[in-house]
Image 1 (cartoon, rainbow, N blue to C red):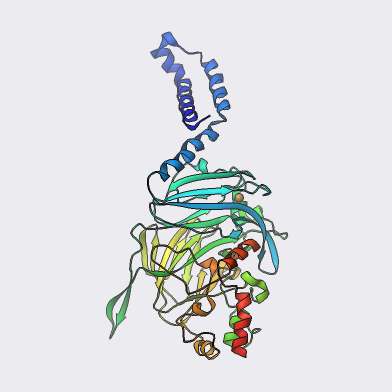
Image 2: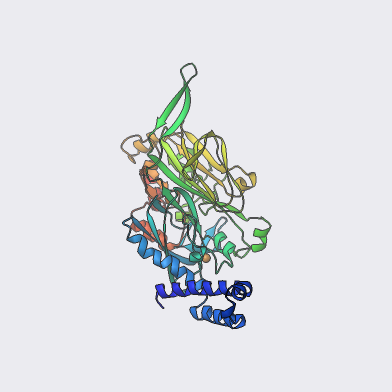
Length: 469
Ligand SMILES: [Cu+2]
């Protein structure tokens, strides 16, 4: 049945149902001479809907598929976003693994980045050998929720929408016809879509005092070095399977940032460079500490001093996130494309809520990003930004010939972790280098390596050799 005809049938079915519902008064008092056999109509309507495959199957076709063709013809920029739904086993802290569900073999799923007004063509494919169906509920869209319904193994679904609103938006698996949605999301099926404002981002204004205390304003260009931080929880039993009972009681097993507990803390290479001994931890929590952990080995987030830094933050979890950076003030908080606060210490994100934080790290140092809920801090929601050269490593790197001259950020030597770096968009400053870090399947790691990202587990021994002679 073609789309136009099926849509007409839908309209006809609704009209007939309306006549049936109002029939007892309308048909008999107003058009008594043509009164209908209501009992007979009921049977016809149900039979008609049944023949069409049910209303649920007709409506997505009428809205989603038709729109893909129509939107592309408007001349707008069309961005394709292709995802697969895949169950894989992924590591968790303590040398164990858990049974993860992923978008495209990684947790969180790939980040979509578009500009306000773009058309997004979202395609979700489920491999034939996948154990369950999956769907994709895209918070950046405004369309019938029926489009987000699950896709069976071996099948593909597609919908299109216009990214009308700027900001950060969650996307997540919708389970199998909504059943198991919690399991799929907490097993890893979540990600973000960043929609850049059509006219770009605003300059950042920071109030400062100077001289003997006069109030001054410093303006930073809209271009910024950007990171993405996605908060969530894991609810697991001993076998690494999702524990719904624990979720209902809000008893999480772990708190994760970009899928990993304590993913952005020092590792043995940092111990060696800063403490002179790979085995002496320089930080209280270093669980992902060893080259054999490859892309799972913890990494640090490097920024320059006096640089405009922009953070895209989403709370995918069941618990609030009290976002705070120890030793820093959040210079600007934006939600949607409206400024919510400036020069604030902490900002609260409820479940499925997001923000953009703009800030500048004035002094060299290590700054801890946390969910300032102590239960979250101690179960994994803790990472470190390192600004400038607080450990005086430039002479070490230059002396060993690792770099020709001092650098303004360790990112120029070691790169920033790939899972914390969003795709480039309007007003993005390119990261000096990016290393392979994240909760990835082996095939994702191979792809990133082929794309030229740095496998630090191969590079660090070479750098260490250069430094130690
Ligand atoms: Cu799913």
